[in-house]
Image (cartoon, rainbow over all chains, first blue to last red):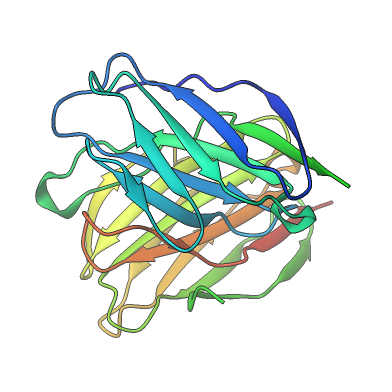
Length: 113
Length: 112
């Protein structure tokens, strides 16, 4: 399984962009990068995913390097409600309708006023 | 609201007992996943079902079992409970194995 490495914690000022890095140097060509977040023991919330192109949705942008060995999740204007643990996950086993997510320790993002 | 419903929200029981956790997936989703989150272990994948069939198994103990019913809801059965089984148990669903997972808000199990 491809592993991910994230910093354990980060701070961000409210209203500024939060840039969360993730390394996944052993990613395979057909593996996607997924981002989830978990706010204080609630269920993890899907944010965004991508294969090799940059992606953007109403929540965030995902920038994947050309060699796919790392990615950055960008929250363009962080609010206090974005304080959470953010998980970067490489999704494994797409065949046969499997598709489990293996969570690491994630990055705790603290948005400060 | 993710559309995934888990019941009950909280469960307190004694060691040695058996409990059943229930999950209703989002409308139209065929896959159900179960995860356990304890303080010292993070989010651990337990098991996945797709349209009633087991598709993937993680670190699920032999004391635990699950099934997915024809109406696609799922139940996780935990037996011979130990103090270490105290945790949050999350259910997630997806349309296929390639769709994003959407998680419920979990069942908090406390074993005393």
